[in-house]
Length: 83
Image (tube, rainbow, N blue to C red; front, side):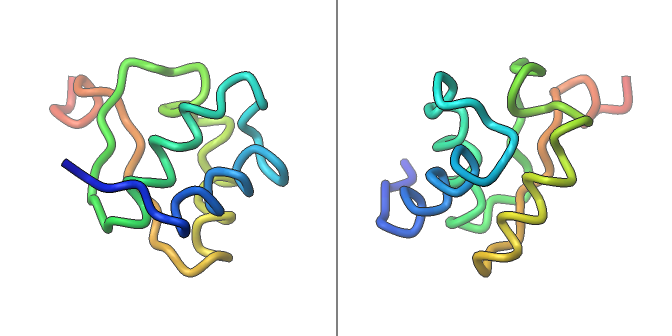
């Protein structure tokens, strides 16, 4: 299990405060942040509203990188399998 860290909390706050993730979806921001902070290559999800969302992807990636983390690839299992 991946642990919650100060860095993940700060990154999640930036994704909500400066980014495209709405405050009501702060748990989604935390999922993205924990994956990025721990260097996870892929974050698979069926949540296309706030996580695997092509319209938000560039801004999410930019915020992660600006805080020193390489973002995970955010996609659905179908996208990963090429379906």
